[in-house]
Length: 507
Ligand SMILES: [Ca+2]
Ligand SMILES: [Ca+2]
Ligand SMILES: [Ca+2]
Image (tube, rainbow, N blue to C red; front, side, top):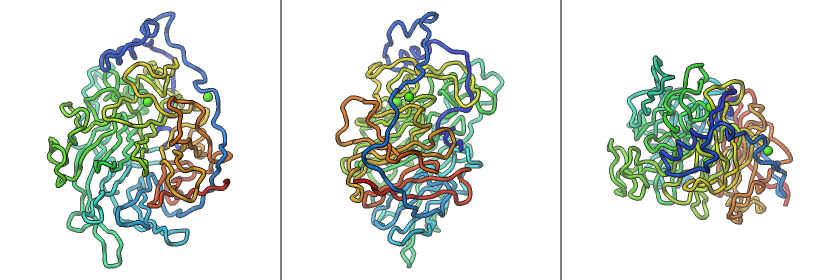
């Protein structure tokens, strides 16, 4: 299905290529970093694509896992989270608009119970390729007493807190530059009924809006959210969509892309697109200064407090679709979906880090190419290995190329007890072995004992081969056990979705 596609890249590709000048221009203008002179020149030194960026393929590792179906009563499960004070439940974010509760103490198949329905707000998903919808949720750290839960939803365009950056490129003359949708963060109040079940508070039927960001295109919405150990809410936002984070690129509708001026959104601190955001959503918590709209607070040590978007925590991200905090040590792990070549895992270690997009894809220098889409790829490519350079960019800690998948699905560092061979390993995956073929993959690497330097070959596969589903998310229960969230071909409709528990099959 082409959620993969869109998670991931455009559907067409092309021929005309630009030189490294564009990349260098981005770098010099926004980062004060420099590239070798060879990369700045045109003509004979025009960047040449690397045909196979990472040679070794991901191989099955010593630990293998089995999958046991917990429920099939869902449609497109993107996240599986827990709520303080509710240790026996896994709450599943279903893209079509439902927050489900699964009682893990009952035998499979578990019948999901709806605790919140946000579908009336949603723009999309309208078809299996649509990346819009109910994208993430996070329960308040004090949920047991305040009953608050936060959501990320794609909604119809409305006056936004963060409007599109205006584009004056000549290619856009005569085009209206109407945004596709807004991604909105809301706060909801849940109450417990006499039977102990959670429901929306009837006194507050629509969630309080905290902030929103206008998206020029429908894809690359990220929208995952988790509270960090600091009690602040972290939320990811994608680069605005299309492909290559590049204005004038032919969009899926045949018109030129807008909303990605200059060097793109990932490198711009004037937009929430292509970012990890951090806010204090609970205004009763006095930490931080009130936001411009008064609906939340900006933590005091956010890295760009005087900037246009003081909510920014990290930048240079493309589609950081899923992320997580390590239960044991609070480490922040992000799976950032790549363009045509590289999928990566980023480790966020400080405020203000730049993870490179669209100067780099993985540890490679990235060339956005010309402006066309044809077929399944855009015209962009990686052209040089460049670990550690340019300065100021934080490289991924693990990466793989498209011989092994199409879009990374970030997971969790395993801290449970049932899979001793995976303790301390970051368990993640790829949505589909080949574009939309419904063959997800499960991967891992040792997070506790990882090499200080990126090594391409540290990732192992947790199965002999792909699973028979498209992988779209992971869940982690209160005990630290993990769940693969999937749907079958032909995509997220009806009850093709499933929540599957991971267990270790080899010692
Ligand atoms: Ca390869
Ligand atoms: Ca990166
Ligand atoms: Ca391009």
